Amino acid sequence: MITLHLLRHAKSDWDGGEADHDRPLSARGERAAAAMAVYFRQQGIAPDFVLCSSARRTRDTLAILRDGLPDDVAVETTRDIYLATAAQLVARLKSIPVRARIALAIGHNPGMEDTVRVLTGDSAGLKFPTCALATLDSTSGWATLGAGRAELRRFVTPKDLV
Image (tube, rainbow, N blue to C red):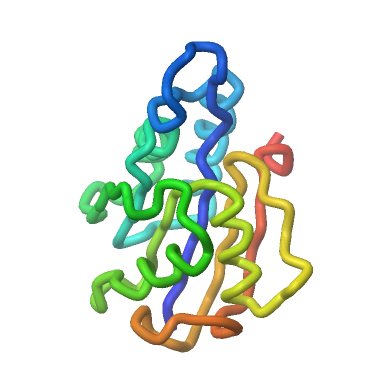
């Protein structure tokens, strides 16, 4: 059994004139990420591997979440999942180290939303607002993760936490 947490980055700031990859979090995004960090601690969400997009807003989201994560969690920051499609993200998830049983991927939409749809086989999918968290369980391993091979166990948005 593996568990995959898919987290969309927190709300970013569009006002600074930065390139898309370099946009920071907005004040609202910082508050949402802080609320999600508390939720991670309260729920005992403790990944042993984190895959994070290299975009600033995803790295900023991870930085705020760090207090809620295990100290020894392995983190890989990569441009591979920056604005990745579901197919690209699923392909990248297949390379998560075998020893990892619980993983957290922090990325972007529409890739995150579409990945939940693909992995659960649910054509309706979910609307995935910023800083939303989907938790999926699968009896397959990372290398065999694919369409319809996971079950949605939890879906939480920042609005659910306030």
